[in-house]
Image 1 (tube, rainbow, N blue to C red):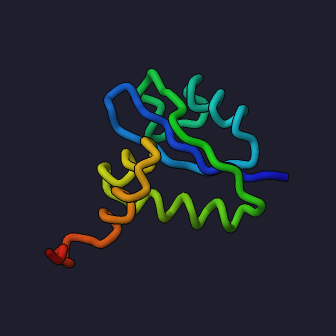
Image 2 (image 1 turned 30 degrees about the vertical axis):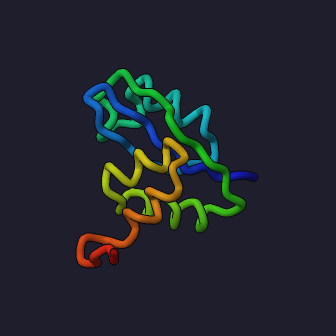
Length: 98
């Protein structure tokens, strides 16, 4: 069984990150509002990212990590711009060297 981390872009431009063991069913729940919570009032929703993991624990760790990222870092990942993800991982407290 696979577990999934996914990101939805909401109608208001925000992002929602979650994990599930049944991606198709969870997306249906979000679209119909039966999942409730954050996405229920932010339709339409668009799946912009999904990634399988072999265990729920790994998926949950990835979800929590992504939820802690800035919007810029999430968008860099969505573009596949891994150099920007790396640069943005350095945090605000570290200065780039010349």
